[in-house]
Image 1 (spheres, rainbow, N blue to C red):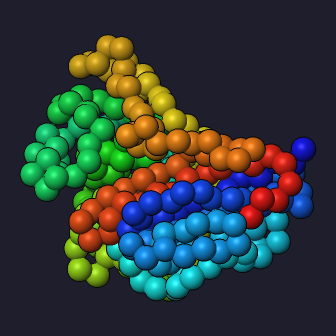
Image 2 (tube, one colour):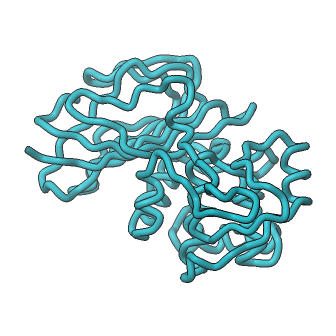
Length: 274
């Protein structure tokens, strides 16, 4: 049987009834699915997609199987944190290094309504645990802590994010913050996000975290049993099963302008069903 790894990215989604993924020609290869959506629906092949922007790509040969408006610039909410976590793991090699949780960051993001990983102020957490906190519960404070550690400030880190985007050839992407909170001029496209995610998954630490659903950090001063981190994929009874396969990890997000967002990785067995 053939196994594939798929990536599914969705923004502005109302509802997805069913998503079919194809089998790869080589068992170790992958495919990428990228969506952004509104209330309009459409049917492609046997797949019902309620999206205005999407891309399905077979990474065994980079063939685009399905797409619509893949180059349109759209808000991406917490999919932004894919870049944030990737840069943290690229720039900091010592994942055991500890960082002090800045209470001012928690106060600021709480007032802005950002999602949080629930780290306690003045606690100390490792780089590894911060990366998990960025990608699993979509912790805004974890993203800001990463920025401060790597670049000294969010402003400097955002500059670094745009440098990474430029080097990757992401011409439809511009970052204004590390969290994805709505702000003018912060956007990307499904095409660019697919390229970013493919690149990020080449980092073994990123891949491991991205495909983890639940994780407990190492013990800390204020949490002797560690912080329990749960992927937002598991919220609201989301079903991770696919026909002869399953979603094994991913990243979600939501803002008023972006709507609901999803970036996920799936394993697929059996012949094509798309």
